[in-house]
Image (cartoon, rainbow, N blue to C red; front, side, top):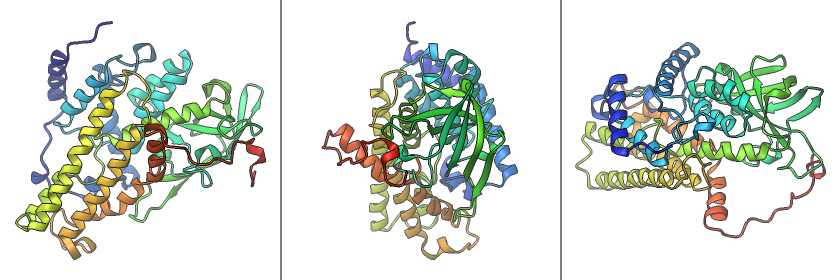
Length: 413
């Protein structure tokens, strides 16, 4: 099927966005709240549900208009367009007041839906992938464990087959939005007698299944957007297995690549931006200070470089293909930029950032400062991203590996 003309398609996108959304307000005309500058959402449940409803309404409208999953092949439920079309849509969308998304919306649409589309059966794609893309169903990510964070392949959650069902026992942690999700994309060890990466299988787990317990994790910022999830004798039908038995590591790598791309991109606001810091400096009458101007210039250059890198990675990706390790670069740049943005805001405000003086848009920056360190862990730690870049992009020698033995023979297993 021929690709639509880019200029004509841009015009149609712009027209649809203008009919659907309001133009975006600039930072200088907006009095920031803590929610505006938060890296991770820290809202009460009812407020979070209202935000999810707004996000879902927009995602459904976008899906119905044909602007969801732009680069996913049509046979997998996407639009079959190029990465250039996706970058163009993001560029046009940034000029409008898009409902502020959440981690759960991003995980559902950009991770779980894509993974089910790529690895699921035709029936699973029809039943679940489309519902995830439309956000008719919400899905969380059940990957990380207390003893298997950066080394995800060391996970200990087990699944054993019992007839046409699998029985799952284990624990997951740092699960965003689990309390609102209908499903979770889970990794479990199904064969302990092969090397650790080979014995993992992926499942869609209904979050209301007997034996699933969700416990919120209170963060230092006061919110509880992350959760622990305990699974005790949870029975999942074989029809909810994603991919072949033992294919879970491949599913995980594809999902994590999508996560790094989502984390590094500018499609969802995460914390404060350069424009916000510039507006703050102007409100405090600090833009005449030569040192402040130098710091602002440095932050602007880094912001522009990250945006250019995101665009380059997107355009280099094959249409509908799985993101490669280059996505680690955009994720690493995004976490570094968040840290530098918070540091400059703190320097500009001084003591104002540690106590609420009543000045609009100042104390709200504490949400950014408290959330930015966590972004160095979310979606893969900075150290993991550097390893991926070194080994898979720069082709440097890999680190010595001593775990190429059956998982059951590793110490502690």
